[in-house]
Length: 73
Picture 1 (cartoon, rainbow, N blue to C red):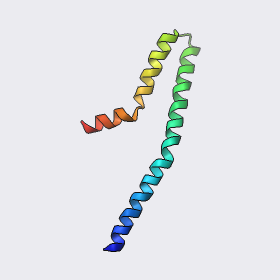
Picture 2 (picture 1 turned 45 degrees about the vertical axis):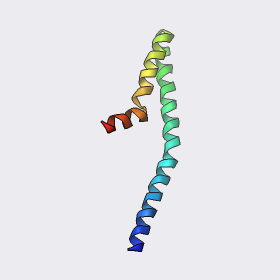
Picture 3 (picture 1 turned 90 degrees about the vertical axis):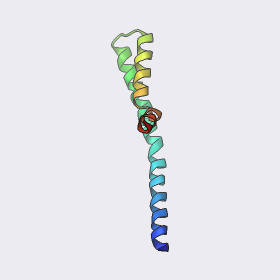
Picture 4 (picture 1 turned 180 degrees about the vertical axis):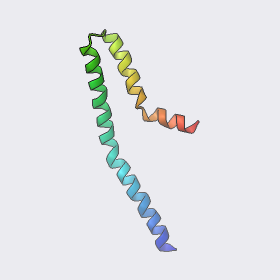
């Protein structure tokens, strides 16, 4: 019984460790993608206000807070 509890605790620790190690990389990729998106919009000659509005909407699509709030509903 004690070894079973230990394996559960170890498994939780490994899962949390992976989540923490992957998180910053995903945030960096998301930030990079938003920059590329905005650069592409500017290259098409859109107004800066429109670029900012569309970039903000694109940024919100990948918002983790939105995912969590929709999961609670």
